[in-house]
Amino acid sequence: MPSVNPYYDKLPGSYLFSEIGRRVREFTAAHPRNRLIRLGIGDVTSPLPPSVIRALHRAVEEQADPEGFKGYGPEQGYEFLRRAIVEDSFRNLGITPEEIFVSDGAKCDLGNFQELFDLSCKVAVTDPVYPVYVDSNVMAGRGGEWKDGRFSGIIYLPCNAENNFVPDLPRERPDLIYLCYPNNPTGTVLTKDQLQVWVDYAREKDCLILYDSAYEAYISGPDLPRSIYELEGARDVAVEFRSYSKLAGFTGLRCGYVVLPRTVPAGRAAGGGTDLWSMWLRRQSTKYNGCPYIVQRAAEAVHSQEGRAETRTLVKKYMDNARVIRAAFEETGFRVYGGEDAPYVWVKLPAGLDSWSFFDRLLHEAEIVGTPGAGFGPSGEGYFRLTGFGDPSLTEEAAARLKRMYKAIPE
Image (cartoon, rainbow, N blue to C red):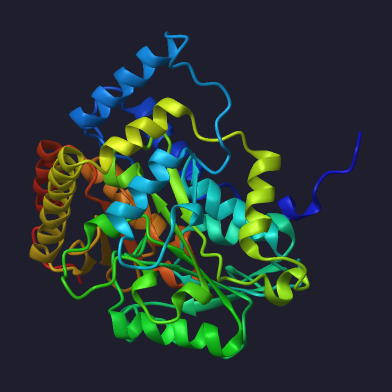
């Protein structure tokens, strides 16, 4: 048999959400009549918006018509969608349709984009962190050794209550910096001034920011940046990743996009031989046949006047859920973060209680599924994540169960 990629062996245990699934399956097998409330994985629960459903039906009917049938599409995405994206989200930010690359989701893009860079590149991540950033680089060979809950080749930037969840600039210069705002898992945000610090640093140190803004639709603060391109100089040092999953419920339909300005150079990471835009286009053209036509028509509908109104309703529903969860934990005496500009609630656990123990306790005593903070990195230990993506009535029930579970402030 051929040799396999040795770096997969460096990944510790199973993927976070696979382990959660295993524990939940064991619980349900032992308690088949119990009703679990799942507030762990950030999957949406509401149906697709009506305008999206109509667009899907129209596109399907086109596929039955010789005049409207579509086969292979452009790997970069159909122009009708790329233009709609720019008009709706980047109209005054200098982004053009040719700088949009449509895909089947931000998770795939974030995992794949690291392929463009040499294995010698140093990677920095905020900690706690969405696991894909770290794991995809470990799989490629940039992780180093796993020891004491972290990889030696990754630069970790702690974000916790002690620094108000604002990461400090790294002491060691990285080549790639992963930033996610609104943040998954902490639900926190950066102001324009705070984010400008990172853009200025990247320009000074010749770094590239990979900016995950999958949750930008949940920002309510008028002065908070929804795109990194609102910051001066960001077009020269940042690539932005967006998704329709949490905006319009496309977790099953699958669609997202990368915003990659032509002004972002390849720099030292690619030997200066070409620009990143051309490299990403070549990568997508070689390994990807494009997001399905009917899905892109559905995504286009999200940017219509009706679609925007419908998605605002969805976002409000999920944020109302997040506020219910946050209020329940606050009422029972926990310190809580997030849940204001993001659909995630980040709970500080009592001293001496680790996050996997709290996961099991919440599962067995309240029959609620959440996500242990330890699964998001070393700085996630001592915290716990819950999502606002559940059904509103079940979220209210979860809040009631939590209050019954903790009738007094936890010591």
